[in-house]
Length: 201
Image (spheres, rainbow, N blue to C red):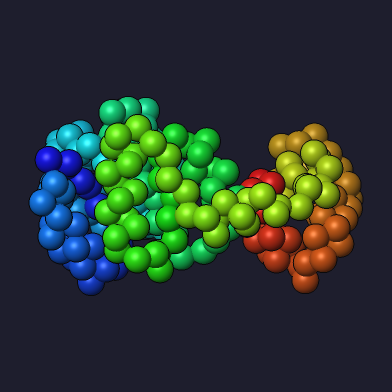
């Protein structure tokens, strides 16, 4: 019997997912949580063989939780579900020790098979996500532009970024402006979104 933990913040999806998996003779849902920061404690208590994690979770995102889970309970294989085919997500997932990566609109049978495969030691990646990752453009940003954008993504203002990176305020503004132009973004928020989606931050 394969023991499965589910993490999904939308109750109807969490309960539906559990019901679908419980229909299988060889799968047993041993825990279902709604927050990312509940994943590791629930896994340490229930000792699942596989964890199915939504990527967008309150408390702690699914990829950060996956990295912690892989560290604390390495025998538990992780399958991440996402609604977005973003190559940056896939690269982060692989770096976090995730064994499976599927889109939420995949057929239920694909998830069931993915769970069985990752527990058997295989890796499973949605073909659409794999193609998106292969088509990824090269990062046009300079290293300092990435540093500045990464800090801006945390909510830091130009003055704070300047102090933390030992730059002048004007230099920080120049890096932000050049990043916006290179990414054909509307503004710094759009530039952060584009760079994050591509996995450049």
